[in-house]
Length: 283
Length: 180
Image (cartoon, rainbow over all chains, first blue to last red; front, side):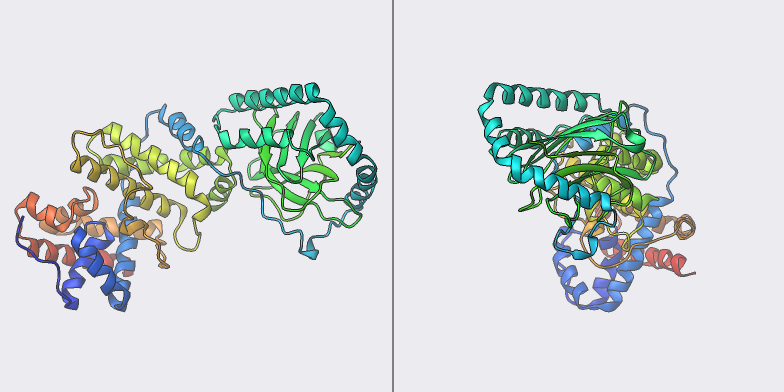
């Protein structure tokens, strides 16, 4: 090792370090003093900004090299199998401006809320009483979920989600919603198990393939004639038109109905296209 | 279009990650191959890059860098991680924990913009190629091999002070290419 000591505070000596910092070539012991200097030096910050751009430019100007054909599958499978929180599409039920324009949504909320009030208590007691049926449905839902995941080209291992699926299906306030296809998705069917406390388990089949830049979005409709649908997640379908997902429910929301629309990638704050799959909570 | 793809990735679309791979993997693999000595290591860098993209897509900010610029920064950072891990422990297989490594300058959070156009990138490349040999060699050692000042001095036998000065002179030319 040469006998160089850590840099002194003269600005010129820090100027020497800007390039090294931009290229990540700065010595470990010089990094901290340099960052301290940078905080108070406009001209070094400007130089650093330029050199960072140059750094990106150098990277961009390398000739591309075609990776081996099998690297794609390995890379994508490893990437998507990382543990990942399920993120509900942001939607703010407290914002009055997202009231649904279509009367279809209002009728949905109204009709279902009647059934909800009349039938919910009875239904959940009935459901809890049918232990054998419930564990059969649980096994079926878990198997369906597992089969769909295997079918997907990029297997998505999410043990946290599987645990949530089981807790939704076993929760005291779970209700079942059978969904029927509408309009251009007439052949689609779906099923949702909804627990206001524990989340929503959804599966469907027969949905048409999505075009580029589009996604399916799942909505819950609270009871009441003016209730705005709340987005709870987006999803795509595999080559056979199937999907399965488990999402958290927004706090304090009860579902009178569950619906699916097609939206631009990333989802929308409110539905912008016709309902493709819908079902009301049944008693 | 790239920004939409990253948004879709942030929303959980594996298909969108595949699209990003199809568009940019070759460019990033070229950079990784230039930096790593072995092909297998370059392949692992690509895996690290797309794993990071999947984890951090929600944090990508369109105003700060183009998507491809962001990918370049991630690729360089992950390649440098592996290079340095291997140098520190050549007996190990270079396994790294990207989330455990200290942040590198190129990926440290800051409000600066790192947007650069294709034309600017080729100007920078042209400036690099036309540097005097001694300066160009140093830039390449720092940029592609990830050597620090001290490591360059030790490897080349050039005194440390000279390394610093030459690097600074070289980068003045690179900065000039951006503003010309």
